[in-house]
Image 1 (cartoon, rainbow, N blue to C red):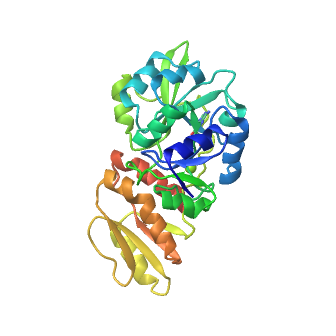
Image 2 (image 1 turned 90 degrees about the vertical axis):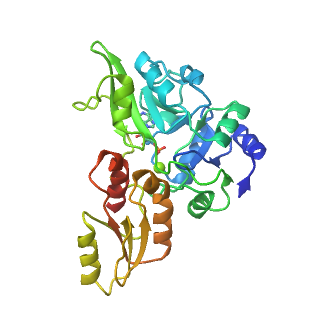
Image 3 (image 1 turned 180 degrees about the vertical axis):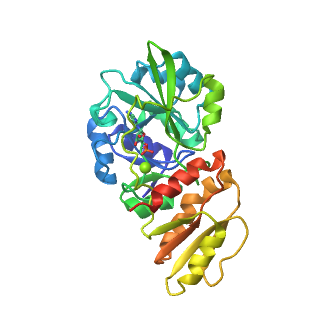
Amino acid sequence: MRVNLDEAIIKLQNGEVVAIPTETVYGLAADASNDDALRQIYAIKQRPADNPLIVHIADINQVNNWATGFTPLAQKLAQAFWPGPLTLVLLAKPHVSNILRGNHPTVALRVPNHALTLQLLKQSGLALAAPSANKFTQLSPTTAAHVTASLGDVVAVLDGGACEVGIESTIVAVTNNQNGESWQLLRLGMLPEANIHAVSGVPATKTKQVIKAPGQHAQHYSPRTPIQLFTSRAELISHANRHPNVRAVALLLGAGAVPNCTYFVLNNNATDVAYKLYDTLHKMDALNAEQLLIEAPPNATEWLAILDRLTRATHR
Ligand code: AMP
Ligand code: MG
């Protein structure tokens, strides 16, 4: 069911859930300080309780309502990249709901870069917990229609068009101890690690995982159809040729064709592919094929987040 901005605000203030647009993917939102509202998110998504939720806030000034750990390094990153596809994991204030943080000592925060949702956050006066608006482990939604297809028409959706980035945020944990401040990459997104390094002035800590990133399941972001990733186009085509009786749908990154096979082609450009990836996988999945054959992206840093999502999609 579609709702407008005013209806979305009323529902959220009443403790109901509403799917909202962001620049990454659509989120299933609820008032982050209302435990009953938060429980509905987990129930609708069938999401495990130990998989905490990202809190979406209107601006940087709200961080201190949720975190004690808004350290100078975290502030620098927020100033540089918000609104935008960066989630900061910081030490939580004691009052922050355990349901929200899955019993972890940390809270995840982000200012999304989407005009309609920023207006929603400002006008409602709420902070909104919002994981992706799909059933647990399914493909993420990047349009209002994807949300309805996954969660049903009973879920209210604020339609803000197709998500501009198209894949989930980069998640960074910032910690402060006797050795000073450091940061760790918990999940790759389209905001590259190099940009975070450049702003923070120090490289990511790779050795010991100080902060736990629960919910990074190997099987995630999966279509219903089994999916196979090919490191070269030649291998993909040869696989299709060797299995003429398997109904397959292929995805190529860059111009070309797969003989005797239904196929989709995306530009060989990481930004374009991120924007269209989930929508294309939704379309491929809808063809009820027996197998999805995907050409792996080039081995280059700007493709790492896309490779991460595709790799998780192949696990089942
Ligand atoms: P998403 O499923 O896209 O909403 O992203 C949620 C992910 O953010 C979780 O699976 C965690 O990896 C991370 N996250 C969210 N909240 C926290 C938290 N309080 N502490 C650590 N990581 C978190
Ligand atoms: Mg998700």
